Image (cartoon, rainbow, N blue to C red):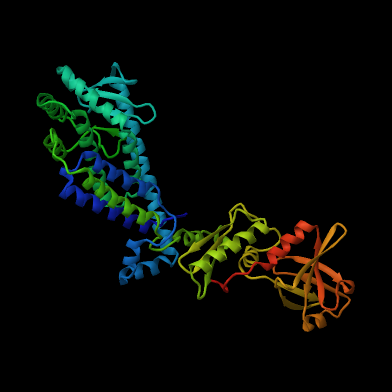
Length: 477
């Protein structure tokens, strides 16, 4: 599972919004209101969970064939572009969050200052508020119902408003509002998302109207419609900024709600399920697909001074996805043996692997670059005699373990060239990362040389480490 970059999530969410708006404009009035609410909920799921799991995104794959998107992808790979994009996006998210948070605090305080307890209904406290404040359901954990004093002129109006807000509560519409606002915060720069939020709010109200009036007679429907018109005389706070339900709607939305009252002729259940199923398929394409430029945040990390020497990118020449996954698996084993469990190994693009060390990780007595090489590249044993060194290839057939008392000895079969190089009194054995062994002639036999000895478990781990082979050559960028 990996995060999706901003460009990709914007494209995907915009395509989903266009699909919902198309359905809404063509057959929306013929669908049960719960269908539209379900579609908006699926959109919210895509925006607030910006990840992908596997596979390749079909929408982005089609766009990548266009020259414009190839240029955009190349530009994103520059690194500095990613830094600017994420920086501007983060500032916008923070600013939008503060505006929404302060707006909600202000509205909540206003409700508390101008409320009077009316009673309790189905476990929820019901308050009267001043006539210049709209009726609404306010709060997430402990929600409360607020009824505008404009409704005091009719007991029926009060009853309908309480029933309407209770319907919002039973179907978690207060949390729907929270998800909707979260989408706006994360996609603050996307005008389609702002328009979608307005339609989303409207469809939630229509769906609630439908449930309240279901199986009601025409007289009751007319009284409900009169109540809606009467409550629309005052529209205060911006409903897109407050986590409330039913606080305010535009004249066009109110007209649509009035027009839908008493609507009973809807499409068949199978048709409605086909609409939802098509949305689910699109959503699956998003969650199971990769981004326009995958893992761009890896390149963002390389722009940060503190992380600059902790992010390493390797390209795999002439490799396929199976090779990439095998390299990742091998590197996962290596970093575990090197006691760097917090390091991340992830796929980047189709032929790249990124190795990222934690900011809290330590490189001990060597550099992160040297450590990255020992985790990424195939292993070789280095014999050192004086100031000269000689590399020897490691294979499973060439390694053997011999038990002597409490110690285990790891032996490596060597060729004639290596045996000739070791024709000295002392030698040292190391790999790229650390010294393995310092030996003398007693550890050099005719066809094999001792390269390490220790407890049996450590020798077994060392042997496993030395035998890890990557399926293709890794070249650091």
